[in-house]
Length: 239
Image (cartoon, rainbow, N blue to C red):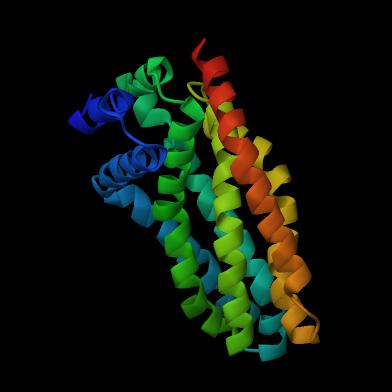
């Protein structure tokens, strides 16, 4: 177990605040992720390749590219986020850190929320930053690109939170990656619909407020409920 894991588990004894505990969890997971840069780059390279191959396969017809751009980017982001879900809890499960977290005096839900936020910062935020560059391949307007960024900023954390529940339920199971996809993908469909619909609304001249508001509401609901649900799923998987 690493020194950072020891300080994380003993955080409450040192009078660590809730924000301090979250910061410690996020910093720990970010450091561990940077030691496995290949895993982080795999997700980003997959996203770039999937989005970039569609214009080559469809052809140079700009009207068709503009229409399909929102769906292509969002589907690629969803599939890319699935690649990293298996690593969310597996390393801590294998080295015994997860078991110690469950026995620690801190709330497991808070620790899980910190791990989810770190996962999004490593696997989701790079996709958001790369999306506008890739959107230029589809001749998307500046307004559509801004809406795409806003939708991804609201939607990709939801994908990480929903994915955390699936990763916790399949922890330690053989073929868990396939099971995670079967569990998570149906639950992510509303995020996909509202995110792509917001960008499509720009091209039709409609307001994007309703789709972005729904994504914001889903984000709040996910942030409230998924850490607790994930914590309970981890307890079930560890029994």
